[in-house]
Picture 1 (cartoon, rainbow, N blue to C red):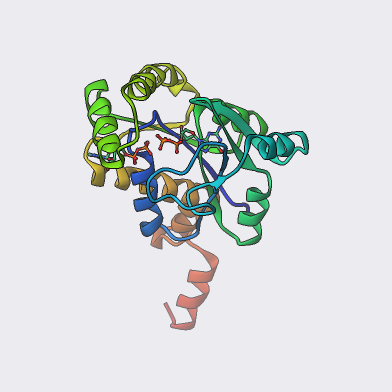
Picture 2 (picture 1 turned 135 degrees about the vertical axis):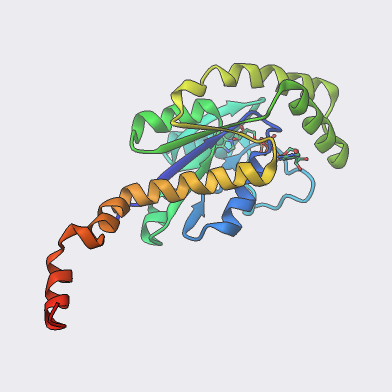
Length: 219
Ligand SMILES: Nc1nc2c(ncn2[C@@H]2O[C@H](COP(=O)(O)OP(=O)(O)O)[C@@H](O)[C@H]2O)c(=O)[nH]1
Ligand SMILES: Nc1ncnc2c1ncn2[C@@H]1O[C@H](COP(=O)(O)OP(=O)(O)O)[C@@H](O)[C@H]1O
C-alpha cells in the first residue's frame, strides 16, 4: 500500500512543532523526516533528533549531488529534505510527514502532486508575536530583529495558503491537534477505501459473503 506524504507548513512560532510532536504521540505509523539545516542548534536540540545540523559546504555538496527532494533558504540558513526520507518511510510501511517552509512545500507539490498539504496558522498576528516572544524568552536567544523578521515573513507565507489542501488554526492546542489527527485519519481512510469497505458491510448491501453465511444458518 502506498504511503501518504503529508506536508506541513506554518509561519515560525505558530506552534507547528508543538502540534506535530503531539500528533506523533496520538497517531501510529507516521514517520517524521529529519531535515538537514545549516542553522545552529537551539536550546536542547540535538544533532540527528530535531535536525541534521550541517555546514554550508556540506549542504552545498549535497545539493550538487542531488541528495535533496527539496531545499530552500529560510531566515538566512539552508534547510533541505533528503530524497532518502521517502524510501525509508516506504520501506518501513509508514506515512511520512515533512515539516517544511512554503518554498520547499511548493517544490514537493510540483514533484509529488499526490502529497497532502496542511497549513497551520496562528489565530492572529498579536498571538503569533506573543508566542514568538514567550519562546525567545524561554530560550534566551532570539533578538528583536529576528522576531520582527519572523512576523513580516509570516504575512508573506500566508499568501501561499491557497496552494495547500487543508488549513487549520492553532488557537486551542487540543482542538488543533484533534483536527490534524482527523485529517491524517481521513486521508488514510480515503486511501484505503474505508467508505467502500464499510458500505459493503451494511446489512442492506446484499453482500454475497453475508448472504452465504446467513444461508448456512438457514436464514
Ligand atoms: N524547505 C524546507 N524548510 C524547512 C525544512 N526543515 C525545516 N524547514 C522550515 O524552516 C523554517 C525554520 O525552522 P526552524 O529553524 O526550526 O524555526 P522555527 O520554525 O521557528 O521553529 C520553518 O518554516 C520550517 O518549516 C526543510 O527540510 N526544507
Ligand atoms: N495552541 C497554543 N496555545 C498557546 N501556546 C502555544 C500553542 N501552540 C504552541 N504554543 C507555544 O507557542 C510557542 C511556539 O510554538 P512552536 O511549536 O515552537 O512553534 P513553531 O514550531 O511553529 O515555530 C511555544 O512556546 C509553544 O509552547
